[in-house]
Amino acid sequence: MERKIEELSNAFNKALLDNQAETSDESSDSDDDDDDDDNNDADVQLYAQASPDDSSTFFTSREWQIKLTSITNAYHSVKQPNEPNRMQCLLQPVCRSPHNTQASPLPATDNESRPGAQKSQFPTLNINIPATIHHNFTTWHFPQRLSQSTIEGRNGSNGCTLITLTIAKLFYSFRPNNIAKSLQLNQSLAYLTVSGILIGNQHYDRITIGVPRLLVFGVREAATYLNFLGNISIGSELPVSITKEPVPSATLAYHLELASQKPKTACLFILSGNTVVFIPLAPNNVLLIDSHLHGQTGAFVALCERRHIYELLTWFKSFNNFQYSLGTVTQVTFI
Figure (cartoon, rainbow, N blue to C red):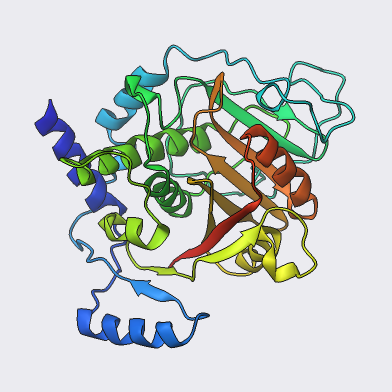
C-alpha cells in the first residue's frame, strides 16, 4: 500500500510540473539571492525541472478520484455554523441561512459559466457544501472530518504552509469555473481543496520523518520541499495587520489589492502559526481557503468582494479565535 502511495505521489509531482519550465543554474540563483538581500522589494526565483515527455495528469487519474470519493462519501449533508465558533455574530445584521429561500442571492463572480466559457479541466467532487451567506461575503464549511488535522483519521497537522502552496498551485493550473456566491461550493474547488490537504499532509509527513512533527514552515522553506510548484516567485515576508491601520501598506488588504494586479499571484497569510491562502479573482473578488479544523467544522472557503474585505477579515479573526491581528503576508507568483 505504501509503495502504491509513493507511486501516486511521484506521478502527481510529475503531472504538476509545467512542461515548458526551464532549469536554472544554482550559482545564478545565488547571485540573485544576494541582490535580494540588498533590496527587500525583489523576489526570489525558484525553479523546478519539468519532464517534457510526461503528459500524464494525476489530478484526473482514476486512483486519485477513487481515493477522494472514498474519503468524502459519508459527507453529503454538512451542517453550517450559525455563529463564528459559538461567538457572537459580529458582522451581519441579518445572518441568512443557506436554507432561507427568501434571501436574495448575491451576484456570481466573473468565473461563473457563461456562453462560450471554457470548461474547467479539473475533476469534480460529489459533496454538498451549502453556502452560508453573510452580509457581504459567503463561506462554505467542510465537515469536521475534512480538515488538515482530521482527514483520514489524523490527529493533528502542522502542514498548512505546504497545503496552501499546493492549493494555490492547483488553482492556477486548473482554474475552477462557476464559483457562485449563493450556491453550494463549486465541485472543482472542493476537489482541489481536499486534494491540496491530502498532498500537503503527505509531504509534511515525508519531511518530518524521524523528527517531532511540531515544525511550522515559512513560505520560502516550504516551497523548497515542493518540487512540483515549478517556476515561482516568492516575495518578501512582510508584517501586516488584518485590521485597518493609519498606514495602508501595513494592512493585509493593501497587499491583497497589489496581488490582484499581478497574474497568478496568491497571498499566503500566517497568523498565530496558521497559514491560509488568499487568491484574487478578477475583476474584484478574493477567495480565502483555510484548511484548519474549526471546532465542529473542518476547512472552509470564503468569497468576498475586495471592497468588503475588512468584514471578511473581522469574521476570520473571530471565527478562528485569534487573539492578535498582526501576522505576515508573502506573495507567491506562479510563472
